[in-house]
Image 1 (cartoon, rainbow, N blue to C red):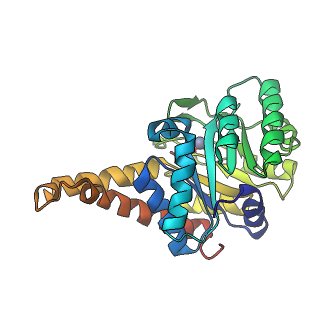
Image 2: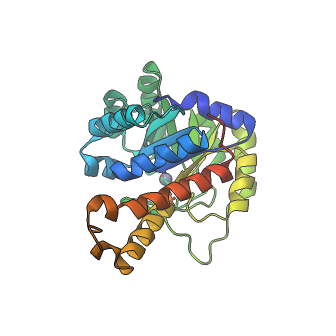
Length: 288
Ligand code: G3H
Ligand code: ZN
């Protein structure tokens, strides 16, 4: 069933594993994420960017789709439906539409405004039992039109943000959205350590830009306080690659291979495989 993120992420933080937060774009993507979590007996977070929700027909449609799939697919693991990188008005809209968690991303605003709006979102979301993520220090790269410069999160700002009562904190530690450049220096573990020490050991931290980070760095980050890892680009690449392969093999021209249900199947299978691998890396298998 749909649950808020607050309890399951607290549990993850306490027991030293992370929960995957996977972006969805359509029906197949959503089915694939739910199926992987169920097969791995893992809690999972399905998230939509503002753009993906708009593409699918709006927040209410996403809520209905996810709830219906949980029923029809007999999903019994905890599922969180979360708004990813939401502007203030969008966060409020999702709170009303039936999301169970929101990210208010005010990282491009002056810090005082980010803080004030976060406080307001926390008040409204918590009144409905929903969890809130916010961000300090922009994540580098670009995701769905959101561009960040990739600065390291300011420690004092992290403390002030956590004091608003948020449930999990996204903080820049050298992570970047999209494909990592050749000359990427890796995650800044000293900075992650400093953040964890400053905000306390029970605050779940969020690693954005989870695609393409070497597995050993992800595992190390989890031991240091990362409890939510966001993955989007890797699934997109896997989906595109499997679909291209199907077409290049000419399978769309054999029998009724052009049937969209057949054409989209290899991409969906590729996402299931990726998602299950990530669940194993994050240590959240059998934690439902
Ligand atoms: O908010 C979503 C993520 O941070 C995804 O980043 O596309 O680099 O995996 P990614
Ligand atoms: Zn992100």
